[in-house]
Image 1 (cartoon, rainbow, N blue to C red):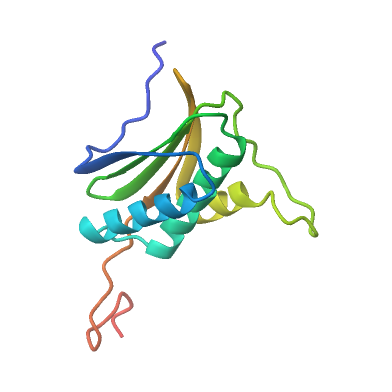
Image 2: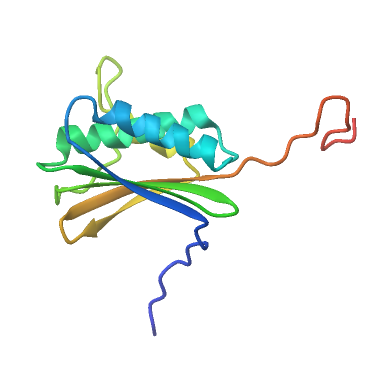
Length: 149
């Protein structure tokens, strides 16, 4: 039996940005994702996409080893995908945080808000990604909605 890789939709837009692994890396990544969403008119919740990006880049900075962080932002006709590459071979673990813990909830947030997320090994470490499916078109004010009201 042949193993088949999942099919990724054809990407219309993609950009790759190297970000120095510094305490301001997450802020730089948030700006890049926010600007891409606006420039490409991506129909996702911008706040959620920026939050998810911030969580993954923060993890890459804290746990990702040395070297730059590579942020890849891509979109097709139906979804936004953000990949965060770092130089660590350690794979992320979705774990529960204690109620009084001040950290450890990042991947729980990603798991809750993203339509899909995961990770894969790269020649220089790993990449963690999330996918957000475009939001449906909303009716204009005064027009019938999905329920015909």
